[in-house]
Image: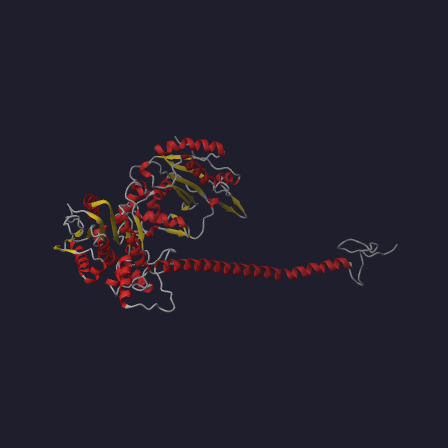
Length: 611
């Protein structure tokens, strides 16, 4: 019998044409080659892994470089737009060779320019005045203000600006003189926090009108020689009637019987004590509505220029009323923060307001001296954003931040809504919040939705959209949706039930009994935050809005976000946190609720719809 060799690996014999043996080899040639290939492949595997890792690292770095280049292009475009806007605002002389003119022609051209442009008038009468783009912008707005007054448009202008940046020099000292030069029949009333400062302004305006330079510019505007007191002076008139003039008074001072085409209020708040005193703020407000506002002539203009001390001072109250009632006076509010907090029309984020007078290092020194960027006084006086450092209920020390979102699959999710519908709340927001509670009973704010819509069907869809946004997550599902009981809910309920049937969505809705005192409702939220049992995300745009609202609560303009978050936290009082998973050896034992969620079921704890 023929003795044929057999390959122990592939079990083929020498009869097979493909099975060829080397001399003294136990395996066939094909098996030896395959083993060698596998060995080479296993030896090359670490090298391939390292090569792929390096390729991924290079790709990641290239993405970073591309992103930096893209951001740089965006920044360059924004800087170019700001530079072009400044060049358009501040005219530049571009002739390579100056035009030679005689002195008389140059003087006449200068007079025409001073009559036409307020900023040129300011620089002429104050040669050492360091003007920047901000002063050109203010003067441009005041020029339009004067034209609107003459046209009877009843303009309302509010300029909020840091201290010592030249606002009073323009608005209270030189602008009234320039305005009376154009409109000598107009009456001006100027008020400040006390009569002494108002009289100083009056003397300076009167002094400008007495100069020969002014009389050459505005030949029809002359002081009445028989009426030149510091508290009140008049413009001379050929007929003796219908003359304009200037009246100076302190806040609360006597201005009864006087009229004003232009009413200037410069710094109505004297110091922090007045800003923090509800009685002082109410006194200033009552003076404004009972005396100052009643002195305006038909079509007259109101000019408020100040630093913004408090949310509820005169500037804050006027803005709040304008937002709440579209039929009330709508002020054009112009804020000039000392350091730009975002890209603006004339400067970039992080740039100083007036570099020639207060460069950025000087402003940073002031900021550090006042307690840092989150200091109340820096924020209010220099950034024109009066956010208190320590609120009545919430303070900055209560906020706990987290870098990443928690694992929602092991959390209970809850949603709560605060509605804003109706004539009294037309400027409020409808707000919905989503919070997740982990096994340690720590609540995590996951999402916040806020919008202004009157349509109840849109609100019903928004509730279901927020609900379905977390139904596709593996195990992370909304347990209960809380809504405030009341007339608003009664109007929305029918639309919500209809949309639930149409969209085949049936969330568990809990109707929450409202409390008349919002501060009492916010106490559970305050307690959780004080114990650091509520976390906030980092780098989310709506978090800044929520923090400002919490710090202003209960005296802020809006409290819709606080109300919604308070409702969500109050829903947790009677509910337990999810149980932790128990590990037994290599296996993990889940609770019944967790098993149901993994199978796609949400544990229903309440009736599908509240009463």
